[in-house]
Image 1 (cartoon, rainbow, N blue to C red):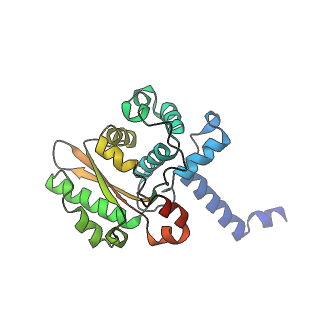
Image 2 (tube, rainbow, N blue to C red):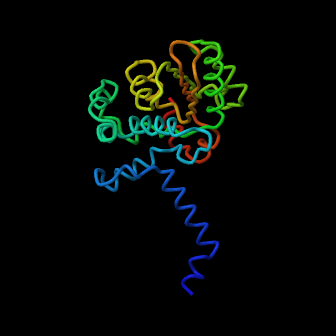
Image 3 (cartoon, rainbow, N blue to C red):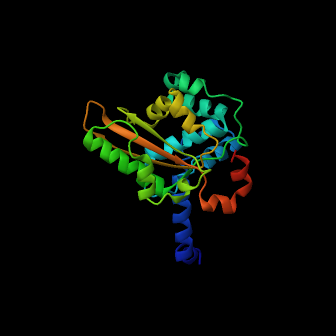
Length: 230
């Protein structure tokens, strides 16, 4: 009877779902160094865990960005434990204000359309060895990011050249005032990240595209959207 129960298709399906969930949450590394509340926040900040297009590097950048936006103290602890003093002592990590709280900034959530815009720019920039943000508005329109056409919806872009690891990319952006302002912008709700080889001395480039709320955010999280509208 036990063996019959164990081999029920429904049970097997649930086991697969749970396995994918915990793998996606990427909580293996948390261990005893974090409280239960901190582990929960780490999972919450990993908003791209179920995204099928962005890779592990992009998902890690999104987690780091969300930690910076909602719990800087936990960001510093996480970077110290996972990446060591070399990164924990960088100004891009140490300089994040501990006064920032979860209520102040919304979590950045992944967008497939913003990923398309970011990935296309990374590919074109890579093949042409171009640096910069040329054609951002056109790309957002081509890939149907119609929310960026609304007058109060903010949009922005970060590019980085020559680095490949998630932590190097994130710290590099955080040590640049303009790029950090995008990551910490309270008007941004959505993010897409894409990278590609760069046929220059840089060898690699990564692009972040940001935008304000989508219609889904306005419908299901209006209190947060209109709180940060001004």
